[in-house]
Length: 258
Image (tube, rainbow, N blue to C red):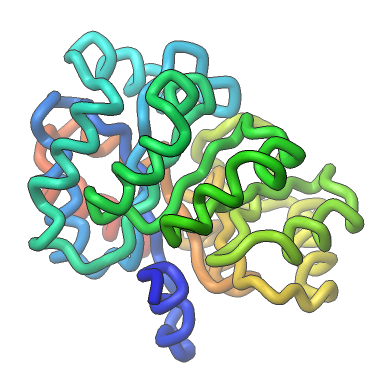
């Protein structure tokens, strides 16, 4: 069974926490160390960012991390090599998150084949048109048993959400707002109403809420309205400040208790 499906099937009442970081930042060769530290600290799933020069959905923290990673020499080929090196040491699901252009240059079939060879269970490609997903990408992803995770936002129509739910597997990435990534102190009434609206749809796929989670209040709001939460910018900031994944994870835990 795909590790993502296995995670959600066996989680019981546990609320999951997934973390994002950008491969190649702060150091080119630190990818494996960051992932292994996350597993030691009980993180349920890891989103490994694939740096790109034009990251449309990312806020300044993750954009800056991507710039550092590219300057450090991170490439998709190098990332797959780093993930393959730790494949037998990591048991939690890995999801590569990045943009379509590098995937197209790498070759779609080669990309999913490399995912399998590197122990990757899923991918998130925010700028992948849904029609291209259905007609081109999904058949290849299914061949290699890799989950392609789709995002929804407060602006996504109910018809599109149900279509996504019917044609994807693993989980749905529920973006807390239509804005770019970045930490927030709280979720306003409009976001809570959005969470309630999606809850009432009784979707088939589990959901993970991301964007803006950085403290106890936002974490608990996300976990109360989904299977779990995804944290990106807050952890990326701490990792850059400490240059030590274990210390960054300790400081993240402290921040999430406030």
